[in-house]
Length: 170
Image (cartoon, rainbow, N blue to C red):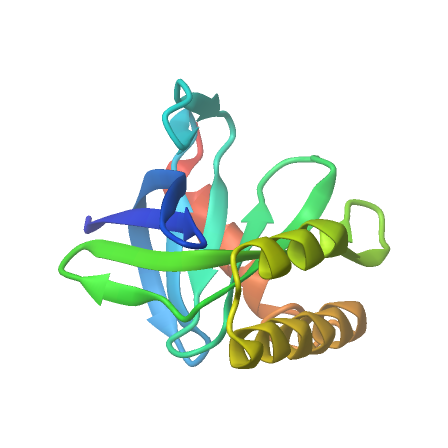
């Protein structure tokens, strides 16, 4: 069971979300990971928060996003962070969170969140024009893919959730 440490920062390098996950496997969409039931997530230097149940995470090989599929009824069935592509250094996957999030709510409905935060931060921190354009384009592409249930937001995610449940069932 490979342990991977996921490390998000905010522009220009402030520590954001970080947590340890285990590798579930890989497919054409990228690397699938799991936060086991009771696993902890931590934002910056805040105290860790236990997540019970956990979640399934996809880190695509070169895309400007990563995604979480929640394992229990939560506000969001799917939660995608628009970010720089993941960089791997051994067992650490690091990304810069670019504020925009694209979600599918439990029960339906796709939305782009935090557009105001993105506008504020891109101006305050001087995001390069290319990063701003890529983040906006990615959010639009994710919205369309999630809303239409195009892969990996159709069958792939629920398939990995089933593997998660098999592996971590009580």
